[in-house]
Length: 255
Ligand SMILES: Nc1ncnc2c1ncn2[C@@H]1O[C@H](COP(=O)(O)OP(=O)(O)O)[C@@H](O)[C@H]1O
Ligand SMILES: [Mg+2]
Image (cartoon, rainbow, N blue to C red; front, side, top):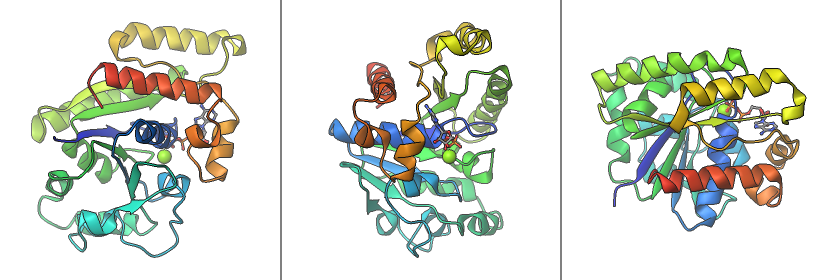
């Protein structure tokens, strides 16, 4: 069976990508899926959150893309059952510059993932569009993006759609924007601003909007414990929200 390869990018900013990747990975792992998380952010937040110290020397995604190591050599177990990780480290920035000098760097991730031994591959992308974002979109079948419910954040979505169209035209015509996860959503009582932004999102992207993820202090807390939210706070409402997103993905055959 071929793996479901899902890239999680945004056009700009910090909106909940890593939280979404790590939380969905933990839930799908609990449900018996073999999950591989690829951390493509030199800040290595997903790596850290999955219980792996990014400062400790180990084979990372940069080494794999530079053909210095195999995917298998870079793949490690994490604190989350069923979830493996290809980590990032701060050296990824330099490795991406090196990759810019080779021929066809964007063909490497798809080739590396061709025979991956996982059911689901979640690729965590860096904050802004970087070469790694392109590599992830070339390798993926589906794009799951995230947005905060503010007009400023929503303006990033057309930018990401334009990038997806460019990648479809140049490299990967099967790529589709499959879902948009509203993240860090305050309670409706927090103000009309957020309610209006959510309404606008649902109008503009009707079938693509997943269940929303509520704002909760348990998420930064889970991060500081290097434990995915569903394992750190199984009964938190935001864990239920991520379970609902996982159900949404299952219903659509995306995982
Ligand atoms: N639902 C949420 N409630 C509260 N804080 C959140 C929530 N989701 C994410 N955060 C916090 O917001 C910040 C950005 O989230 P993160 O997942 O790292 O975004 P990105 O990967 O897009 O940069 C982090 O500090 C994270 O702990
Ligand atoms: Mg991140």
